[in-house]
Image 1 (cartoon, one colour):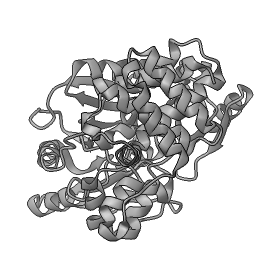
Image 2 (tube, rainbow, N blue to C red):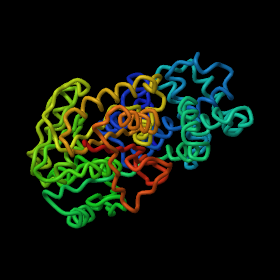
Image 3 (cartoon, rainbow, N blue to C red):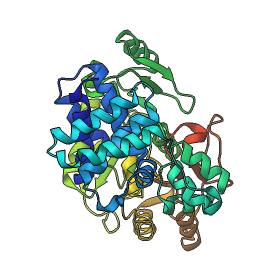
Length: 441
């Protein structure tokens, strides 16, 4: 690999480290501005996501092989050490000597020459030793935290909520890249036609086992550059979100309210399910994000979506036949897509359930008699999910539980009420997701 590929990976990792920017957006931006070959871009992606996904494991090993505490190291030095250790422990194609020498070069290239001896010493010691883990007998949560690079707060919560075996499977599912799923725009094409067209463009496309009009894609390159995408023949959406839309059972000529809509994927899928007949009101708190809904709808040829901006916990809306309340959440179900989320200092686990419940209660005011209300999140946390759903039923006598029509291929991971479904990545290869449904009496 070229030296510039490691420098590119370093630059991208420092952006995430300093700005807290989303990994996928950061990497796409950095790679689009580079002149690297596809082989080198793949190398950059491997190191970039690997370092983020394995950060706690790498930091633990830095603490083992370094005579300096991790919190006393400059961020740049910590990132270079993580990159070097990741190559040593996880990249068989990179000789250990190359991982060490190239890390030392990174120090010189980034005005960190005074730390080059320290970096060289830590990495040489690690390359001559082996990867270290805490003793599981001294604390299983600590062991899992380092082993799977997930903070102990999340590990402990998952162990408490779902049990040790399920928590371990959930932690294992955090590794690797998630599937890319396309929602077929049936207003313009069919699943069969789109599959054939994509395959003729050299893209792998398979039918989803989870729901209809969904294709699992591979070897796509930059999605926005595909002619099929520019023509509005599909949009990218995980199968969990597509299933969520299906559970709303939206029909032609109905009024549908999507209270936390941006960037609009669920509104688009609902419009397609309604054959672009009826009305969808899509709301978001920020005007800039509402613009994403409008531009996406235009690309897809959807004209039944109208957008509004405001706080869904207190806004007034027209009465609707169907209301989708997909609330802001801690995002623990999409760590595979945004691995940096797990390291946020405050995931809002204490405050979010109350905020979500306010949005749910306000949204419920606008459901017509006999109408359906769906509450959903993209997280795996019972307090944001099942607890809010059950609290809602206890405090709203004008609503009843509405049994979800779950496809045969979708497997439950835990015991839940008939109007609730938690989707786990390791069971259905979807995002981690929660769906619950209620009917207005």
